[in-house]
Amino acid sequence: MSVRTRKFERFFHGSYTPGTSAGVDEWLKKDTSAAGAPTMTTGVDGLKSTLAATDEAEVLTFYFGDIKSFDIDDLISAEFILKANTTLAANETLVIGMAGSQADDPDAIAQNAWFKIVGAASANTTLLCESDDGTTDVDDKATGLSLGIVTHKSLMIDFSEGISSRSPPATSKGKQLHFRATDANGVLRRVCDHVAFDMSGYTGGLQPFLQLQKASGTGVPAVSLLGVIIEYRLPV
Image 1: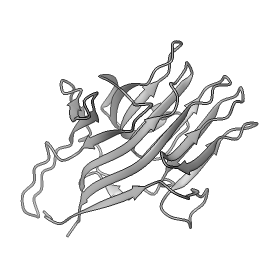
Image 2 (image 1 turned 45 degrees about the horizontal axis):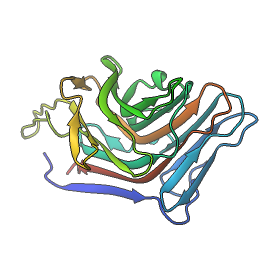
Image 3 (image 1 turned 90 degrees about the vertical axis):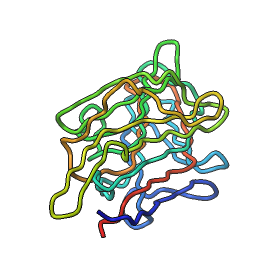
Image 4 (image 1 turned 60 degrees about the vertical axis):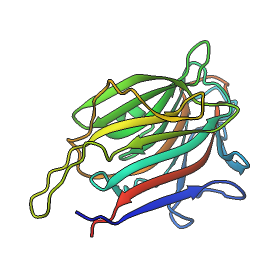
């Protein structure tokens, strides 16, 4: 087992425009809309994703273009620093975390470990946790916390606990995830600690993933992603 670790860090402040095809950097933007024009712009709050005031289904994704660079067996943690610029209304959804191949329907993504906000008629920013390894699907587990609107919060997925190994050629690794989020006191604490998030059925790669969408309506939900920090083990 390698004892070398590295961190992938990317902070989005200042001038930055994500590309829609390979060549700019690791990140890509995917815009699934018809008449509207969702945007991604950078400022002091980070990369702001905003849907358009057009009554249609829209999906705005920020990801690695399905290049799944991080082997789940080597992942230690993935942290996302962001805030909501608006509450989410009915038919509006946000997911952010680590994922397999992109799909406009988050439920169709076979592998994921992410935080989720599902809007409601009264509007909210309530955080849920989910994981799926293609076999074991754990959905909509309440954290008791909300995503900040005034201030950024850290959302972390911990892949390191529950992993055990011994020297090659025989190895044994388990994938019991833990989720952590910044609470009202500014403390990054574990959430959903009564839930078993099991991804032991998956052995492939994952990519960082943010997807904001609505099924219909003229709402303009927006979130600002300030940074992504992914810690992982090197294979040698």
